Length: 246
Image (cartoon, rainbow, N blue to C red):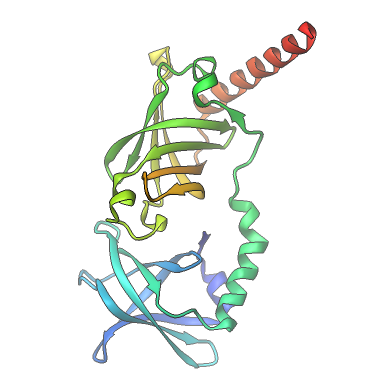
């Protein structure tokens, strides 16, 4: 996904963006994130614009108007955010520039640092008291397994009932912020991480299982970095020990 700034809109040559449901109902909206098949947008008004038949209207810097049919669904009451799913593709002049931006800046959104496998094999070595930890999505807790960790990121797997039952139409409807609770053997070291999902590694609609890579949001969590650093040393020591035995 790509987070939108004023500079990005200027590069795509977008002056303004609107959502229209009827010919006499058009409101200004602000793109928040670009995905492959949809956009996350912000609408400042309190009105409910959920509709299966709407239009995304884009005013370009050369004053050309572009209308793209879409359906719109509210995803966040507090922050007034919606997802618009495109019924027809965006014009090439816009989609091409978005793809250029993803290729250029996408690496900046990737997790940094060496991935250290935790999963079922090493959760005790990492210091966790149980295989199952907790992920918090929109205020609801779900069991998860920590698949791997790095200095600035974490990958988790969990079952998301809303995805399995079809209550959500796309993985993009998962909140842009996930909370992850880590319960360690030493309770003093327990952590709550605020993370941003940046990649879906696996998604099984039949079972509802998701594997998602997340970037830990700033400010830097020193406690987590210390745990990862200790874990890395243990993993390296174990590797050297195995080499000496061979």
